[in-house]
Amino acid sequence: MSLVVQRTPDASTFFRGQTIFLTGGTGCLGGCLLFKLALKLDARKIFVLVRGSAAQAMASWARTMPIEIEPVFATGKVHLVVGDFTKGDFGIEPATLAELAEQVTLVVHAAASISLKAPLRTTIANNCIPTLQLAKLSTTFTKLSCFAYISSAYANSFLPDGVVEEKIYEMGDAEKEVSDILETGSVSRGMAHLSHLEGVAPYYVGKHLTERLLPSRYPHLPILIVRPTIIGPAISQPYPYYGPSGSCPISTYMRGYMKAPDSGIFHVSPYHPMGTNILDEIPVDLVANILLLHLLHGTRGIVHAGAQSYVPRTLSHIHADIRAFCPSESAPFTYVTDMTIEQGKYARFWKLFGRDWHFSNKATKPLLAVMGPLSVALEDHDAASFMRNRARIIAEAILKSKTKL
Ligand SMILES: NC(=O)c1ccc[n+]([C@@H]2O[C@H](COP(=O)([O-])OP(=O)(O)OC[C@H]3O[C@@H](n4cnc5c(N)ncnc54)[C@H](OP(=O)(O)O)[C@@H]3O)[C@@H](O)[C@H]2O)c1
Image (cartoon, rainbow, N blue to C red):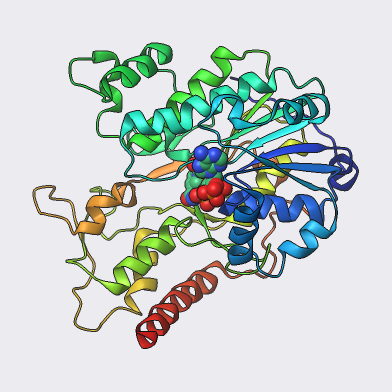
């Protein structure tokens, strides 16, 4: 897929004419997108896929956007579509599907099961296959101008440390890989064509294969693939530090570590013996703005949304934030290049934290100076103190939960 960036300038005029089918609207990124589309961009109509029932979705928003969700619905623009992406036709009623096919101009597919623990076959069945199913459904959407899929910058985590470009890294036959995984449930040693994926977390294998199959199966679909790095709490929208529990991995890591520190030992590359590798995180509202900017500008192809478009911080920066709130007797963080030394349990789980990829942001660079509702300019935002304060908020919540017991 080659990257095409076309210019169409005015966000308000553009989004006022759009009918969006949004999946993952009850999640971290989807909630932020819903807030922006309804309240900041005045989109014409937003169909939101919700799992279970409308009541369950409302209960979820009551937890994650307790103040903001009422004005979002007061716009009258939001239409809930009950469904489940693991079911045929996403479990959507035929009459509603016909409405979508007739009206939708933009699909934003932000729903996923983001568990790093799910087995490979499960993540392929739950994330990859449903995305391909949605792409197929979208080929019947008569007014569709873009199908946006949220992938992950770590879809290519089989690559060595270094620069990762905004392109698909083709490695053999993706169709065969998916069918072999569904059949055997593993990236087995016997299958040479899958060997590059050995050791990569299943969730990222799913993202990688989905990226490859989308354009090959649906060459005529106008596809935009956005690859966020690690999503972090919002700078300001829907509100400062928004981010549902469990959806911001570094916050989850911080919470776990502050509650139960381990040996603090991390394997790092010989180039960063002091943990100065970039641990790439970007606030969710900037991810939303980058995605929406590329929808506005008619971009097709792959776009990274990472710290190059925010402020790159290192593993040791994150650890300094955590350290300030750890019990004083806990071990200091230690970075080792000798891979025979046993790491702590967090380092073993969050394998990516010791890596050193640089995610190119060539596609977004020309848009970094855009002002208005989709601005990614940071103005007087101080990333270091914002993120340090995130650690304080987490530490205070832990303390509060302990005093409640
Ligand atoms: N979080 C990150 O650090 C990160 C980084 C890179 C890329 N991404 C990608 O960005 C996208 C958004 O992630 P997120 O952090 O917003 O995830 P999230 O907070 O976990 O939200 C996931 C969303 O998907 C929905 N969903 C899950 N299973 C579903 C199903 N079977 N049918 C319908 N909806 C279902 C959830 O609905 P319920 O409310 O019903 O559970 C929820 O709305 C995902 O594609 C994710 O892979 C995330």
